[in-house]
Amino acid sequence: MRAAARAEWLQVLRTRWNLLAPRERAGLVLAGVLVAVALLWWVLLGPALATLRHAEAQHQQLDARLQAMRSLQSEAMALQNQPRITYDDALRALEASVRQRLGATAQLSVAGERATLTLKAAEPEALARWLAQARVNARAMPAEARLTRTPGPATAPARWDGSLVLTLPAR
Image 1 (cartoon, one colour):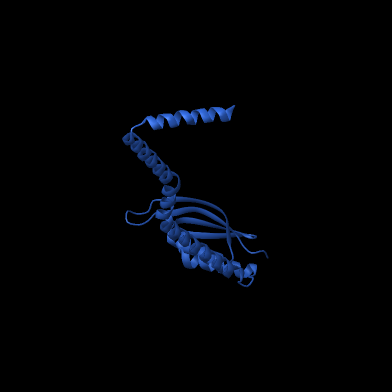
Image 2 (image 1 turned 120 degrees about the vertical axis):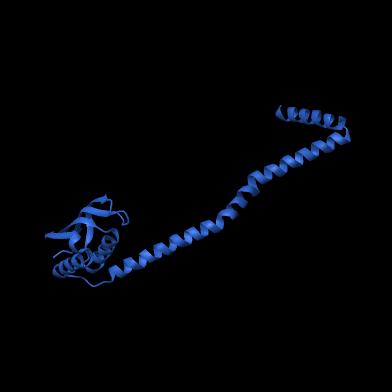
């Protein structure tokens, strides 16, 4: 039944097509071609060209992320390859780094394998350098941070107040 209905429908279309003037047929063919080209562009070519347009920027972004990951990997490998450090050596290195990098803006207190650093108006750059040095030289890892950012003088950057709890290597 379906095939018969389809055949009848096609016959009606052929009859109407044959009744059209050549100029009308050409117009319908042109409209069909334009619709087909627009559909082809919208479905196949447009998305592909948009991908190509953005590919270079995405490539550069991914390269930068890869470089950062490789840098972190080499840093992690360097930390893993460092010789073991004793608790006493770690404590001495941590105390020395506090005096050297933070000076009077910090006070260190140690209880077992946990060291608490209390900060008063510490400069952000000095604190960042100290954290890196504490991680590398003393193998101290931050466990807790309770820091508050306080505004500095008009021309100086903000400062940090609060406390940092670090874990030292086991005895």
